[in-house]
Image (cartoon, rainbow, N blue to C red; front, side, top):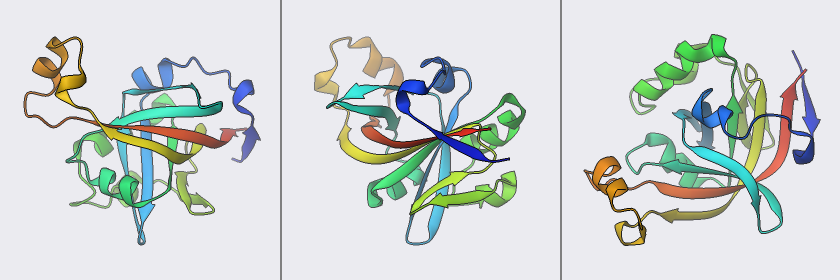
Length: 168
């Protein structure tokens, strides 16, 4: 199956569902190493007059090292039939296992940005902003108490969506 490039204004997906219900794979590559992680927190919007996605990644995630070392990454959204593979990616670290081989996914590249042929929708992104969360910045103090008991605050990334590929 092939992809068709679409414009951000033509994206018909519900902006909440891909991250919350469908999950996504955040995929990054650096120095010949590719890894992906599942994500269920993030969103889409406009920032600095650009179509953007935002994601958050905890410091202990292996994929974070690749994201930090690379200028680009992809967000790949999958159909329900890939739920098992995405769950596997969320339970295993790329430090310990080749998740691409284990999940039988087909790695593709758009220039230097990795993505997966099995995805139904791919956002090819360039990093614009990265900032670790800080406990002092929370207005609702119940959030760090519940979500960050170990002090492992996410890093917020704002990503320019450079290209959108939709499965046809």
